[in-house]
Image 1: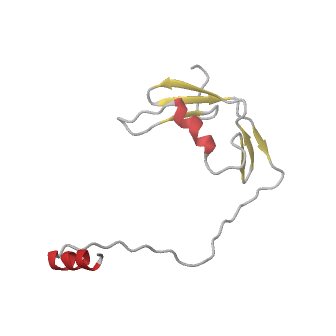
Image 2: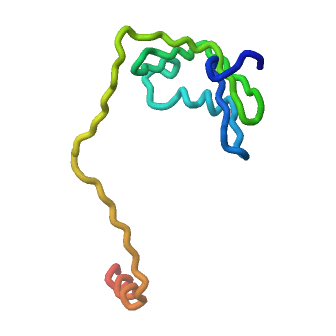
Image 3: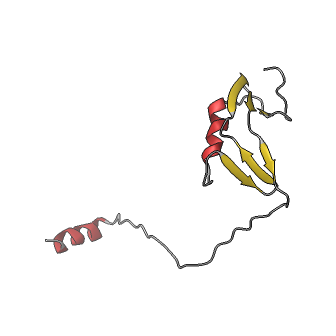
Length: 108
């Protein structure tokens, strides 16, 4: 599409042999955000509620209609974790026929 560039919202793949689909770009909006249409970023909010995703070719997607609302102040979100305990699982197996026969006998 004419007028689609990195400045206006175009994604292209630099690696040869890979394909990029509009659905893949659209699906990125569903990851780890409270609102799938508004992305809170350090410098502002990206609103994708009216975005249009258009395949340019097999390797490029153009996205239009996603205004960025700049914040007055740049924020940084820090994420951390603390130890709450441990979780473990053990899986074992027995191949020795003598042990297996004795297990069968003891289960009766």
